[in-house]
Length: 463
Image (cartoon, rainbow, N blue to C red; front, side, top):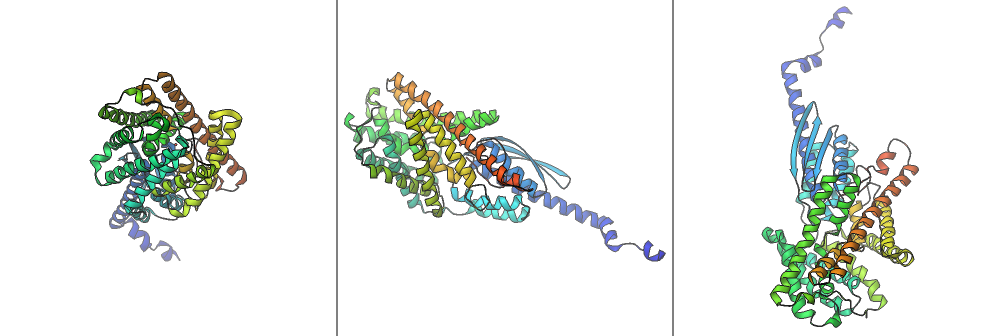
Protein backbone atom coordinates (compact mmCIF):
# COMPACT_ATOMS: atom_id res chain seq x y z
CA UNK A 1 0.00 0.00 0.00
CA UNK A 2 2.67 2.45 1.03
CA UNK A 3 4.73 1.55 -2.00
CA UNK A 4 1.78 2.16 -4.30
CA UNK A 5 1.00 5.45 -2.62
CA UNK A 6 4.55 6.65 -2.98
CA UNK A 7 4.90 5.62 -6.64
CA UNK A 8 5.40 8.56 -9.02
CA UNK A 9 2.62 9.47 -11.46
CA UNK A 10 4.09 9.15 -15.00
CA UNK A 11 1.58 11.58 -16.50
CA UNK A 12 2.32 14.17 -13.85
CA UNK A 13 6.04 13.58 -14.28
CA UNK A 14 5.62 14.30 -17.98
CA UNK A 15 3.82 17.55 -17.29
CA UNK A 16 6.30 18.64 -14.65
CA UNK A 17 9.35 17.80 -16.73
CA UNK A 18 11.13 20.59 -18.59
CA UNK A 19 10.02 19.09 -21.90
CA UNK A 20 6.36 18.95 -20.74
CA UNK A 21 6.44 22.50 -19.48
CA UNK A 22 7.96 23.69 -22.73
CA UNK A 23 5.30 21.86 -24.75
CA UNK A 24 2.52 23.34 -22.62
CA UNK A 25 4.03 26.82 -22.93
CA UNK A 26 4.19 26.46 -26.69
CA UNK A 27 0.55 25.29 -26.81
CA UNK A 28 -0.56 28.31 -24.77
CA UNK A 29 1.45 30.65 -26.97
CA UNK A 30 -0.09 29.22 -30.14
CA UNK A 31 -3.63 29.33 -28.72
CA UNK A 32 -3.15 32.96 -27.66
CA UNK A 33 -1.84 33.87 -31.12
CA UNK A 34 -4.84 32.23 -32.82
CA UNK A 35 -7.23 34.15 -30.59
CA UNK A 36 -5.44 37.45 -31.23
CA UNK A 37 -5.40 36.85 -34.99
CA UNK A 38 -9.10 36.01 -35.10
CA UNK A 39 -10.17 38.98 -32.97
CA UNK A 40 -7.95 41.29 -35.02
CA UNK A 41 -9.48 40.16 -38.32
CA UNK A 42 -12.96 40.30 -36.82
CA UNK A 43 -12.43 43.87 -35.65
CA UNK A 44 -11.22 44.86 -39.12
CA UNK A 45 -14.33 43.47 -40.80
CA UNK A 46 -16.59 45.13 -38.23
CA UNK A 47 -14.86 48.47 -38.80
CA UNK A 48 -15.45 48.19 -42.54
CA UNK A 49 -19.13 47.50 -41.89
CA UNK A 50 -19.62 49.95 -39.02
CA UNK A 51 -22.73 51.75 -40.19
CA UNK A 52 -24.49 51.37 -36.84
CA UNK A 53 -21.72 52.68 -34.65
CA UNK A 54 -18.83 51.85 -32.37
CA UNK A 55 -20.74 50.20 -29.55
CA UNK A 56 -21.74 47.22 -31.65
CA UNK A 57 -18.11 46.62 -32.58
CA UNK A 58 -17.15 46.49 -28.91
CA UNK A 59 -20.10 44.24 -28.08
CA UNK A 60 -19.35 41.77 -30.86
CA UNK A 61 -15.59 41.53 -30.23
CA UNK A 62 -15.94 41.20 -26.45
CA UNK A 63 -18.64 38.57 -26.85
CA UNK A 64 -16.45 36.58 -29.22
CA UNK A 65 -13.50 36.86 -26.83
CA UNK A 66 -15.57 35.56 -23.92
CA UNK A 67 -16.67 32.60 -26.03
CA UNK A 68 -13.01 31.78 -26.67
CA UNK A 69 -12.17 32.05 -22.96
CA UNK A 70 -10.32 35.32 -23.42
CA UNK A 71 -10.89 38.99 -22.67
CA UNK A 72 -10.83 41.92 -25.08
CA UNK A 73 -10.69 45.65 -24.45
CA UNK A 74 -11.16 48.06 -27.36
CA UNK A 75 -10.64 51.71 -28.11
CA UNK A 76 -12.58 52.41 -31.31
CA UNK A 77 -12.60 55.26 -33.80
CA UNK A 78 -14.42 55.09 -37.14
CA UNK A 79 -11.35 54.07 -39.15
CA UNK A 80 -9.37 52.10 -36.58
CA UNK A 81 -9.21 50.42 -33.21
CA UNK A 82 -6.72 49.14 -30.67
CA UNK A 83 -7.60 45.71 -29.33
CA UNK A 84 -6.06 44.33 -26.14
CA UNK A 85 -6.50 40.56 -25.84
CA UNK A 86 -5.82 38.66 -22.65
CA UNK A 87 -5.67 34.84 -22.54
CA UNK A 88 -3.47 31.99 -21.32
CA UNK A 89 -1.58 34.33 -19.02
CA UNK A 90 -0.60 36.64 -21.88
CA UNK A 91 -1.70 40.09 -23.01
CA UNK A 92 -1.31 41.40 -26.56
CA UNK A 93 -2.35 44.76 -27.98
CA UNK A 94 -2.83 45.17 -31.73
CA UNK A 95 -3.82 48.10 -33.91
CA UNK A 96 -6.46 47.52 -36.58
CA UNK A 97 -7.31 49.71 -39.55
CA UNK A 98 -10.64 49.48 -41.34
CA UNK A 99 -12.14 52.35 -43.29
CA UNK A 100 -15.96 52.47 -43.40
CA UNK A 101 -17.14 51.63 -46.89
CA UNK A 102 -20.19 50.69 -48.93
CA UNK A 103 -20.15 47.23 -47.45
CA UNK A 104 -21.34 43.87 -48.74
CA UNK A 105 -24.32 42.63 -46.82
CA UNK A 106 -23.62 39.01 -47.80
CA UNK A 107 -20.54 39.15 -45.56
CA UNK A 108 -22.58 40.61 -42.70
CA UNK A 109 -25.20 37.87 -43.08
CA UNK A 110 -22.55 35.13 -43.13
CA UNK A 111 -20.75 36.61 -40.12
CA UNK A 112 -23.72 36.52 -37.75
CA UNK A 113 -24.01 32.72 -37.29
CA UNK A 114 -20.25 32.44 -36.94
CA UNK A 115 -20.24 35.03 -34.15
CA UNK A 116 -23.11 33.21 -32.50
CA UNK A 117 -21.18 29.94 -32.41
CA UNK A 118 -17.98 31.64 -31.24
CA UNK A 119 -19.84 33.45 -28.44
CA UNK A 120 -21.45 30.17 -27.40
CA UNK A 121 -18.02 28.53 -27.16
CA UNK A 122 -18.81 25.90 -29.77
CA UNK A 123 -15.95 26.74 -32.15
CA UNK A 124 -12.30 27.45 -31.45
CA UNK A 125 -10.20 30.38 -32.61
CA UNK A 126 -8.37 28.47 -35.34
CA UNK A 127 -11.55 27.13 -36.95
CA UNK A 128 -13.28 30.50 -36.52
CA UNK A 129 -10.34 32.23 -38.17
CA UNK A 130 -10.58 29.94 -41.19
CA UNK A 131 -14.32 30.60 -41.51
CA UNK A 132 -13.78 34.35 -41.16
CA UNK A 133 -11.10 34.25 -43.87
CA UNK A 134 -13.52 32.42 -46.15
CA UNK A 135 -16.16 35.11 -45.53
CA UNK A 136 -13.83 38.03 -46.24
CA UNK A 137 -12.34 36.42 -49.36
CA UNK A 138 -15.62 35.18 -50.85
CA UNK A 139 -16.58 36.55 -54.24
CA UNK A 140 -19.56 38.94 -54.41
CA UNK A 141 -22.85 37.07 -54.85
CA UNK A 142 -23.83 39.09 -57.92
CA UNK A 143 -21.93 39.83 -61.11
CA UNK A 144 -20.83 43.39 -61.85
CA UNK A 145 -23.63 43.94 -64.35
CA UNK A 146 -26.24 42.93 -61.76
CA UNK A 147 -24.78 45.46 -59.32
CA UNK A 148 -24.94 48.06 -62.09
CA UNK A 149 -28.62 47.25 -62.58
CA UNK A 150 -29.14 47.34 -58.81
CA UNK A 151 -27.73 50.86 -58.37
CA UNK A 152 -29.86 52.04 -61.30
CA UNK A 153 -33.01 50.49 -59.80
CA UNK A 154 -32.05 52.04 -56.44
CA UNK A 155 -32.17 55.49 -58.09
CA UNK A 156 -35.35 54.80 -60.06
CA UNK A 157 -37.20 53.50 -57.01
CA UNK A 158 -36.18 56.54 -54.98
CA UNK A 159 -37.13 59.04 -57.71
CA UNK A 160 -40.87 59.40 -56.85
CA UNK A 161 -39.87 60.47 -53.35
CA UNK A 162 -38.25 63.55 -54.87
CA UNK A 163 -40.90 64.30 -57.50
CA UNK A 164 -43.83 62.00 -58.36
CA UNK A 165 -43.47 62.53 -62.11
CA UNK A 166 -42.72 60.24 -65.05
CA UNK A 167 -40.02 62.67 -66.13
CA UNK A 168 -38.24 62.25 -62.79
CA UNK A 169 -38.42 58.45 -63.13
CA UNK A 170 -36.93 58.08 -66.59
CA UNK A 171 -34.39 60.85 -65.96
CA UNK A 172 -33.28 59.00 -62.83
CA UNK A 173 -32.93 55.81 -64.88
CA UNK A 174 -30.46 57.50 -67.23
CA UNK A 175 -28.54 59.37 -64.52
CA UNK A 176 -28.62 56.32 -62.23
CA UNK A 177 -27.05 54.21 -64.98
CA UNK A 178 -24.23 56.79 -65.23
CA UNK A 179 -23.68 56.67 -61.47
CA UNK A 180 -23.80 52.88 -61.47
CA UNK A 181 -21.21 52.68 -64.25
CA UNK A 182 -18.84 54.91 -62.30
CA UNK A 183 -19.41 52.94 -59.07
CA UNK A 184 -18.71 49.61 -60.76
CA UNK A 185 -15.64 51.04 -62.50
CA UNK A 186 -14.34 52.34 -59.15
CA UNK A 187 -14.25 48.77 -57.81
CA UNK A 188 -11.55 48.03 -60.38
CA UNK A 189 -9.80 51.39 -60.07
CA UNK A 190 -9.02 52.25 -56.42
CA UNK A 191 -7.79 55.72 -57.35
CA UNK A 192 -11.19 56.56 -58.80
CA UNK A 193 -12.88 55.26 -55.65
CA UNK A 194 -11.19 57.90 -53.49
CA UNK A 195 -12.78 60.74 -55.49
CA UNK A 196 -15.89 58.93 -56.67
CA UNK A 197 -18.48 61.20 -54.96
CA UNK A 198 -16.99 64.33 -56.57
CA UNK A 199 -16.63 62.69 -59.98
CA UNK A 200 -20.12 61.19 -59.94
CA UNK A 201 -21.73 64.43 -58.79
CA UNK A 202 -19.85 66.42 -61.44
CA UNK A 203 -20.91 64.12 -64.28
CA UNK A 204 -24.51 63.89 -63.08
CA UNK A 205 -24.66 67.67 -62.62
CA UNK A 206 -23.23 68.32 -66.08
CA UNK A 207 -25.63 65.94 -67.84
CA UNK A 208 -28.62 67.18 -65.84
CA UNK A 209 -27.99 70.85 -66.52
CA UNK A 210 -27.20 70.33 -70.20
CA UNK A 211 -29.85 67.75 -71.10
CA UNK A 212 -32.64 67.36 -68.54
CA UNK A 213 -33.05 70.67 -66.69
CA UNK A 214 -33.63 73.02 -69.58
CA UNK A 215 -37.03 74.20 -68.33
CA UNK A 216 -38.52 74.78 -64.85
CA UNK A 217 -41.56 72.72 -65.87
CA UNK A 218 -39.67 69.52 -64.97
CA UNK A 219 -38.67 70.70 -61.50
CA UNK A 220 -35.43 71.89 -59.97
CA UNK A 221 -32.11 70.45 -61.22
CA UNK A 222 -31.11 69.20 -57.77
CA UNK A 223 -34.36 67.24 -57.50
CA UNK A 224 -33.49 65.57 -60.80
CA UNK A 225 -29.92 64.83 -59.66
CA UNK A 226 -30.59 63.49 -56.16
CA UNK A 227 -31.98 60.01 -56.99
CA UNK A 228 -28.84 59.21 -58.99
CA UNK A 229 -26.58 60.56 -56.21
CA UNK A 230 -28.56 59.02 -53.35
CA UNK A 231 -26.24 56.00 -53.38
CA UNK A 232 -23.48 58.31 -52.09
CA UNK A 233 -25.55 60.43 -49.68
CA UNK A 234 -24.28 59.61 -46.14
CA UNK A 235 -27.57 59.48 -44.29
CA UNK A 236 -26.49 56.34 -42.42
CA UNK A 237 -23.27 57.98 -41.21
CA UNK A 238 -25.18 61.06 -40.04
CA UNK A 239 -27.57 58.94 -37.98
CA UNK A 240 -24.78 56.72 -36.67
CA UNK A 241 -22.84 59.80 -35.57
CA UNK A 242 -25.86 61.15 -33.73
CA UNK A 243 -26.46 57.83 -31.99
CA UNK A 244 -22.80 57.50 -30.98
CA UNK A 245 -22.80 60.99 -29.48
CA UNK A 246 -25.96 60.14 -27.56
CA UNK A 247 -24.39 56.90 -26.31
CA UNK A 248 -21.28 58.70 -25.04
CA UNK A 249 -18.88 57.75 -27.85
CA UNK A 250 -17.92 61.38 -28.31
CA UNK A 251 -14.72 60.95 -30.32
CA UNK A 252 -16.18 58.34 -32.66
CA UNK A 253 -19.43 60.24 -33.11
CA UNK A 254 -17.68 63.55 -33.79
CA UNK A 255 -15.29 62.02 -36.33
CA UNK A 256 -18.09 60.18 -38.11
CA UNK A 257 -20.15 63.38 -38.19
CA UNK A 258 -17.26 65.29 -39.76
CA UNK A 259 -16.79 62.52 -42.32
CA UNK A 260 -20.49 62.52 -43.21
CA UNK A 261 -20.45 66.29 -43.70
CA UNK A 262 -17.30 65.92 -45.81
CA UNK A 263 -19.09 63.45 -48.10
CA UNK A 264 -21.98 65.88 -48.46
CA UNK A 265 -19.56 68.68 -49.29
CA UNK A 266 -17.93 66.49 -51.97
CA UNK A 267 -21.32 65.95 -53.60
CA UNK A 268 -22.04 69.65 -53.33
CA UNK A 269 -18.68 70.47 -54.91
CA UNK A 270 -19.40 68.10 -57.78
CA UNK A 271 -22.74 69.77 -58.45
CA UNK A 272 -21.06 73.18 -58.44
CA UNK A 273 -18.36 71.97 -60.83
CA UNK A 274 -21.07 70.92 -63.25
CA UNK A 275 -22.53 74.41 -62.93
CA UNK A 276 -19.14 75.98 -63.70
CA UNK A 277 -18.49 73.73 -66.72
CA UNK A 278 -21.87 74.49 -68.27
CA UNK A 279 -21.52 78.21 -67.60
CA UNK A 280 -24.96 78.38 -66.05
CA UNK A 281 -25.86 80.93 -63.39
CA UNK A 282 -25.95 79.74 -59.80
CA UNK A 283 -29.64 80.68 -59.77
CA UNK A 284 -30.17 77.68 -62.06
CA UNK A 285 -30.06 75.54 -58.90
CA UNK A 286 -33.62 76.45 -57.96
CA UNK A 287 -35.47 73.94 -55.78
CA UNK A 288 -39.06 73.81 -57.03
CA UNK A 289 -40.94 70.54 -57.52
CA UNK A 290 -43.00 69.88 -60.64
CA UNK A 291 -46.65 68.90 -60.49
CA UNK A 292 -47.00 65.17 -59.94
CA UNK A 293 -48.42 62.93 -62.67
CA UNK A 294 -47.57 59.46 -61.35
CA UNK A 295 -50.61 57.26 -60.59
CA UNK A 296 -50.91 55.66 -57.17
CA UNK A 297 -50.06 52.20 -58.50
CA UNK A 298 -46.70 53.53 -59.78
CA UNK A 299 -45.92 55.04 -56.39
CA UNK A 300 -46.76 51.71 -54.77
CA UNK A 301 -44.60 49.69 -57.18
CA UNK A 302 -41.68 52.11 -56.81
CA UNK A 303 -40.84 50.62 -53.42
CA UNK A 304 -40.53 47.17 -54.98
CA UNK A 305 -38.07 48.59 -57.52
CA UNK A 306 -36.20 50.40 -54.74
CA UNK A 307 -35.93 47.31 -52.51
CA UNK A 308 -34.80 45.10 -55.40
CA UNK A 309 -32.18 47.71 -56.23
CA UNK A 310 -30.99 47.77 -52.62
CA UNK A 311 -30.61 43.98 -52.60
CA UNK A 312 -28.46 44.01 -55.74
CA UNK A 313 -26.51 47.19 -54.95
CA UNK A 314 -25.52 46.12 -51.42
CA UNK A 315 -25.13 42.38 -52.10
CA UNK A 316 -28.00 41.32 -49.85
CA UNK A 317 -28.89 37.61 -50.30
CA UNK A 318 -31.89 37.35 -52.61
CA UNK A 319 -33.83 35.20 -50.12
CA UNK A 320 -34.24 38.30 -47.95
CA UNK A 321 -35.98 40.37 -50.64
CA UNK A 322 -39.53 39.74 -49.42
CA UNK A 323 -38.88 40.30 -45.69
CA UNK A 324 -37.10 43.54 -46.55
CA UNK A 325 -39.95 44.62 -48.81
CA UNK A 326 -42.46 44.07 -46.00
CA UNK A 327 -40.32 46.21 -43.67
CA UNK A 328 -40.10 48.96 -46.30
CA UNK A 329 -43.86 49.08 -46.78
CA UNK A 330 -44.41 48.98 -43.02
CA UNK A 331 -41.99 51.90 -42.52
CA UNK A 332 -43.59 53.92 -45.30
CA UNK A 333 -47.07 53.19 -43.97
CA UNK A 334 -46.22 54.19 -40.41
CA UNK A 335 -44.41 57.32 -41.54
CA UNK A 336 -47.26 58.41 -43.83
CA UNK A 337 -49.96 57.81 -41.23
CA UNK A 338 -48.07 59.43 -38.37
CA UNK A 339 -47.08 62.42 -40.52
CA UNK A 340 -50.75 63.18 -41.21
CA UNK A 341 -51.42 63.19 -37.48
CA UNK A 342 -48.37 64.88 -35.94
CA UNK A 343 -46.31 66.35 -38.79
CA UNK A 344 -43.16 65.35 -40.65
CA UNK A 345 -40.71 65.29 -37.75
CA UNK A 346 -43.08 63.40 -35.48
CA UNK A 347 -43.99 60.99 -38.27
CA UNK A 348 -40.34 60.28 -39.00
CA UNK A 349 -39.63 59.70 -35.30
CA UNK A 350 -42.56 57.28 -34.93
CA UNK A 351 -41.51 55.40 -38.08
CA UNK A 352 -37.93 55.15 -36.80
CA UNK A 353 -39.20 53.77 -33.47
CA UNK A 354 -41.29 51.17 -35.28
CA UNK A 355 -38.41 50.23 -37.57
CA UNK A 356 -35.92 50.00 -34.71
CA UNK A 357 -38.29 47.89 -32.62
CA UNK A 358 -39.20 45.52 -35.46
CA UNK A 359 -35.66 44.97 -36.73
CA UNK A 360 -34.17 44.50 -33.26
CA UNK A 361 -36.89 42.01 -32.32
CA UNK A 362 -36.61 40.11 -35.61
CA UNK A 363 -32.81 39.90 -35.37
CA UNK A 364 -32.79 38.71 -31.75
CA UNK A 365 -32.32 35.04 -32.67
CA UNK A 366 -28.99 33.81 -34.06
CA UNK A 367 -30.74 32.07 -36.98
CA UNK A 368 -32.31 35.30 -38.27
CA UNK A 369 -30.72 37.99 -40.48
CA UNK A 370 -28.61 40.68 -38.79
CA UNK A 371 -30.33 43.88 -37.75
CA UNK A 372 -28.44 46.10 -40.17
CA UNK A 373 -29.61 44.04 -43.16
CA UNK A 374 -33.22 44.29 -42.01
CA UNK A 375 -32.79 47.96 -41.20
CA UNK A 376 -31.10 49.26 -44.34
CA UNK A 377 -33.91 49.58 -46.94
CA UNK A 378 -36.42 50.88 -44.41
CA UNK A 379 -33.90 53.41 -43.14
CA UNK A 380 -33.29 54.74 -46.65
CA UNK A 381 -36.99 55.52 -47.01
CA UNK A 382 -36.63 58.12 -44.24
CA UNK A 383 -34.36 60.12 -46.62
CA UNK A 384 -32.25 62.05 -44.16
CA UNK A 385 -29.11 62.78 -46.17
CA UNK A 386 -30.81 64.30 -49.21
CA UNK A 387 -31.93 67.28 -47.10
CA UNK A 388 -28.32 68.25 -46.47
CA UNK A 389 -27.54 68.10 -50.16
CA UNK A 390 -30.57 70.20 -51.05
CA UNK A 391 -29.72 72.73 -48.35
CA UNK A 392 -26.14 73.23 -49.54
CA UNK A 393 -27.13 73.61 -53.19
CA UNK A 394 -29.97 75.99 -52.30
CA UNK A 395 -27.49 78.19 -50.45
CA UNK A 396 -25.09 78.09 -53.39
CA UNK A 397 -27.93 78.92 -55.76
CA UNK A 398 -28.68 82.15 -53.91
CA UNK A 399 -31.69 80.89 -51.96
CA UNK A 400 -30.50 81.31 -48.35
CA UNK A 401 -33.90 80.97 -46.68
CA UNK A 402 -34.69 77.68 -48.39
CA UNK A 403 -31.14 76.44 -47.87
CA UNK A 404 -31.11 77.10 -44.13
CA UNK A 405 -34.58 75.57 -43.85
CA UNK A 406 -33.36 72.35 -45.45
CA UNK A 407 -30.20 72.23 -43.31
CA UNK A 408 -32.18 72.88 -40.13
CA UNK A 409 -34.66 70.20 -41.10
CA UNK A 410 -31.79 67.79 -41.76
CA UNK A 411 -30.42 68.30 -38.24
CA UNK A 412 -33.88 67.80 -36.77
CA UNK A 413 -34.73 64.76 -38.87
CA UNK A 414 -31.38 63.02 -38.37
CA UNK A 415 -31.77 63.41 -34.61
CA UNK A 416 -35.33 62.11 -34.78
CA UNK A 417 -34.24 59.05 -36.76
CA UNK A 418 -31.32 58.24 -34.46
CA UNK A 419 -33.41 58.74 -31.32
CA UNK A 420 -36.29 56.74 -32.80
CA UNK A 421 -34.10 53.79 -33.78
CA UNK A 422 -32.49 53.86 -30.34
CA UNK A 423 -35.83 53.94 -28.54
CA UNK A 424 -37.24 51.15 -30.69
CA UNK A 425 -34.23 48.97 -29.99
CA UNK A 426 -34.48 49.62 -26.26
CA UNK A 427 -38.18 48.75 -26.25
CA UNK A 428 -37.51 45.53 -28.15
CA UNK A 429 -34.73 44.61 -25.75
CA UNK A 430 -36.92 45.17 -22.71
CA UNK A 431 -39.68 43.10 -24.25
CA UNK A 432 -37.25 40.27 -24.88
CA UNK A 433 -35.91 40.50 -21.34
CA UNK A 434 -39.41 40.31 -19.96
CA UNK A 435 -40.26 37.24 -22.04
CA UNK A 436 -36.97 35.42 -21.56
CA UNK A 437 -35.93 33.43 -18.52
CA UNK A 438 -32.87 31.49 -17.48
CA UNK A 439 -29.19 32.17 -17.83
CA UNK A 440 -29.42 32.93 -21.58
CA UNK A 441 -31.99 35.70 -21.19
CA UNK A 442 -29.40 38.46 -21.36
CA UNK A 443 -27.87 36.99 -24.46
CA UNK A 444 -31.26 36.65 -26.17
CA UNK A 445 -32.27 40.18 -25.33
CA UNK A 446 -29.02 41.92 -26.23
CA UNK A 447 -27.20 44.60 -24.35
CA UNK A 448 -25.94 48.14 -24.68
CA UNK A 449 -27.74 51.43 -25.28
CA UNK A 450 -26.06 52.37 -28.55
CA UNK A 451 -27.29 52.68 -32.09
CA UNK A 452 -27.42 48.96 -32.66
CA UNK A 453 -28.58 47.20 -29.52
CA UNK A 454 -28.94 43.51 -30.04
CA UNK A 455 -27.84 40.16 -28.70
CA UNK A 456 -24.18 39.83 -27.99
CA UNK A 457 -23.58 37.11 -30.59
CA UNK A 458 -25.66 38.93 -33.19
CA UNK A 459 -23.41 41.20 -35.19
CA UNK A 460 -25.34 44.27 -36.27
CA UNK A 461 -22.73 46.64 -37.78
CA UNK A 462 -24.37 50.33 -39.13
CA UNK A 463 -27.02 54.27 -38.06
